Image (tube, helix red, strand yellow):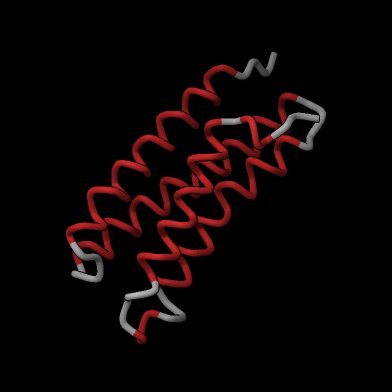
Amino acid sequence: MRDHTKLRAFILADEVVILIYKITQSFPKSEVFGLSAQMRRAAISIPSNIVEGCTRESQIEYRRFLEIAFGSLREVHYQFGLACRLDYVINAEMEECNQKLEEAGKVLAALLRSIKTD
């Protein structure tokens, strides 16, 4: 079994969750069951799938869970951009979150490329 806490991808994904939770706290109340909830679910899905993948014995299953995590990351990236366009996010938060999402995406993509599924 792999130790997810040693993966840079997991650490960054965890940081994304914290950022998304902090950012969505200030969203309009009308978004409590809308964009805010969806962003939180997608964000939590990223590290959760990394953790679950790490428990899998086969490389194929491990890779599949990392692919799901990557899909959730891209989902959050889109939703964050939408929230910015709707003026739900203040400028100070935009830069930090965009950088964290980009870095997490690059690290997770590199991890996926490194896994052989022959």
